Length: 430
Image (cartoon, rainbow, N blue to C red; front, side, top):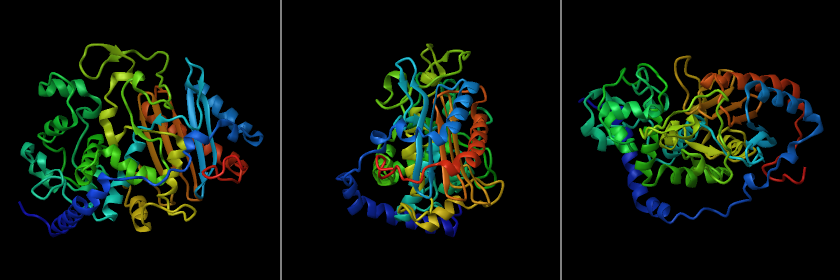
């Protein structure tokens, strides 16, 4: 197998980074003590801070939108130039218990999680721990413990960047393996739902659908592999590393990896809902039980960095504020890295972590699965709208277009009425 010079250079950089991390930096991680935390946004922000007379018209539009789509609850935050201007919950976080949606309510954000994972990868590159040109598999690959299961040599051409851009060669033409666990169990003769390592071993034994880097097809499995890359390089769990080195430094203290069932939800997490006519489904693990799709229909926890993060919209706004090149809040990534993540190469190439970055400078990240739909939309003027629902609609992933249209309709009518303040710092002094 011929190894390209660029790959060799990337491997050497990665090896140096891993060596350093496994020495002094690894010791630092083992005894990591985060800096004293400021008061968490989830604990201090309330709906009353954003229930403003000048925005009653916007509130009415959102209430009408919720009724039209039978949505139980929405969380909305609006930021401009790294200042949080508005953060409010609409409807119910748990209608059965009479709990309203608030800015501090956390929600599953589905594939918005991919942006978080991409930030983690790029942070590692800045620290010299890996290079996005590093091979994923092969003798010098980051995940080379899986090499013995690989039968298609094209895997050895796969780089971290290919995974980031959905260009690794994986296909969902036969179904997304991250959302079809029963089919995976039948295909490989498994008696129980596979853990992550078993799933990877089975899937990498299959041939790729196309040569890495020659085409793109959206892949949740590719971002699961990126989660494993972060674990392998850091020596920490994906969740622990991301909290310690990305989320907490960004001021995001309420982010967690989602669990699968209602009984496992976090204390400040919303309840999720399906449409009234939604049929029960078989539990993902082959138990034979029927469940509500958003609670046991899929293994959400196993998505990891591909789609499993839970967080609030104001804290998600904090993350965007530190990866946007706006000088008001110090970024956790270098300007070159942010430009690298948001540059539009062409119509057929995904950006790094984002789902779309226009030539005009509009950045978009969406996410959806049963029980939730999420939208992050940052505009060229520095304004960012973040909206997450706790209810499925019949449109599935296409519902992101409807939430985008909602935001586009609200912006020209109410942006100028948003208060000039910064809820990130002094919510009670506005």
